[in-house]
Length: 133
Image (tube, rainbow, N blue to C red):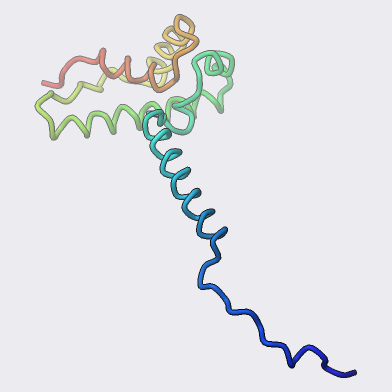
């Protein structure tokens, strides 16, 4: 087989073709917009804390789900209390917080506020705790 095309000179290569450069610029602009939009509407809670109260009320009563709720809620309360220690506000007294009290508060709050989140329910519980003396 003969090589018939080796006598032709290859076209000069551009370092970055115009279409590729335009695509990169467009992608950067779109990503900047998307990141800014996400930051403005970023969820405050993640994981199970972002679950709606309506969904939470449906699942309460399942032993496995109840344990997840109380574990997440206990972590939220402990973390919130630790965050307060560096501020002027006094830490909250968590001695009265138990699995039963968490589940009771979450059930009551979420039944009354189905469009809120589990995180909102636990934040309300935390805010209702007395100051630690």
